[in-house]
Amino acid sequence: MARACVRGQDPPSQVLEDAAAAFVMLSSPVRLHMVWALAQQDSDVSQLALRVGSTPQAISQHLAKLRLAGIVRVRREGRNRVYSLANHSLQAAATLMIERFTPSVSNPRPEALPASRTPST
Image (tube, rainbow, N blue to C red):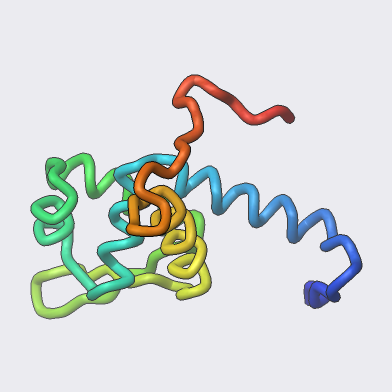
């Protein structure tokens, strides 16, 4: 069982690795949009494709990756497969990042990170 993070102490390396892997999954704008959409309501592939503006085939591939990463889960409803978030803590992280880059009255032009910038490893 993983140790809980304690304020003032560094998280265990496995926790950092798992968090980094989740952020990698959310680094795709399409997957981030899908997580945002699934936070609002459970959806099937065709609903997600319409909402996100992608093809059902591409959405299925993204869902497979998100499912393997433990970010989404699937259930059967009749002939449909309905997807939902497996853990709503990622919803908070996605919301935080989306709100950070959304213009507002107090911050009309939030600074975006350059698209070509890659984080140091």
